[in-house]
Length: 109
Image (tube, rainbow, N blue to C red; front, side):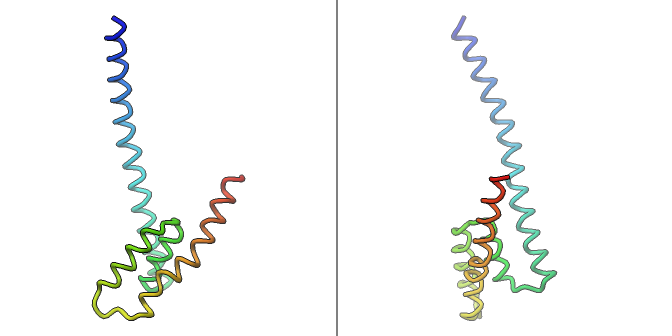
């Protein structure tokens, strides 16, 4: 009797976690897509080089692996100059400290 109740509870907990997990994962994916779209949109409005926008997005999200992926992707494109290859790292270096400061300030209020 107790074992049957436990199995029923376990199944209910698993089902609820699965349903909520799907919802939260969809929410997280939406936030990432909206952030990327916002970065591209603002970059276009300000007429920023797309390579710089990649670095700004990586720095603003404090995501160093995405910076590496952006640099590798740019390096694979034909005809990219050395100056343009350096833009993501420079933009990252500008955005990262601001993102860390904003994150630190947010936790205090």
